[in-house]
Amino acid sequence: MSGLLNLGIVEDKLDYLVRLYKFDGTEDFLAEWLEWDDQRLAVTVCSRETPDGYCKMLFKNLLARRLHKRIFSQNIRDFTDPMVKLRLSEKFSEVAEAIESTVGEQIGLDPKLVIANKYTIRSVREQSQNSVGPIMVVKPGMKVTFEEESTLFRSINEAEKDEFIEVYAPVEFRDEKDKRIKLREYAEVISAIICDILEKKYEEV
Image (cartoon, rainbow, N blue to C red; front, side, top):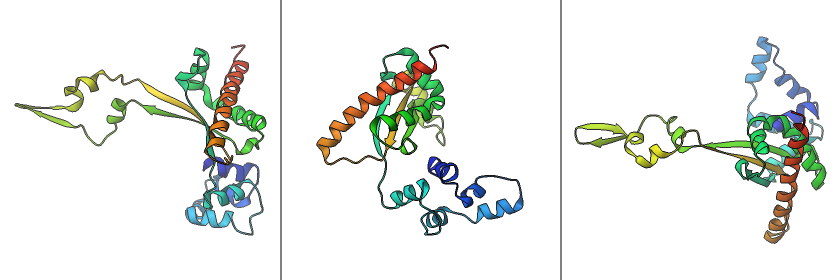
């Protein structure tokens, strides 16, 4: 959603979005901000008064459930080059826009409609620490936490995590066969794009 609104501000230059997302510290700004909710935003963007542009088109697509498709997904650890893995993990935000732009150009889409994203799945042991409270195990004469009692759970490396790179784009597939063929093609092209961008950006580092 943030990317969609950013297109409305930067590309479409919608006055009401610029006002809403350009904080000036005044009480008038806060008062207007509090008057907006998701429904008002969607209705306003899709209204006749809002000129055609990226933001209006994407909001209409959302309402009609014409959603972006995931055209690439890869665990960072599955990239073969160790430096590519490290840079994707630590510096993805520095190359995300270049990935989006290059993918759009190479597969024939508007680069501004391509979304590159990185997300992390942390170890179940670390996630359990953010729960409401520990799970207690009753033993004769005492209580211990599940983390302490379970040998398997203790063996999980708290620092382990899975990081994924995904790319989304407004593509359509004729059928399942067409989908499988295109996704294989996209996977090869996008993986090569990512490696190439990282190698060029950091070749002198």
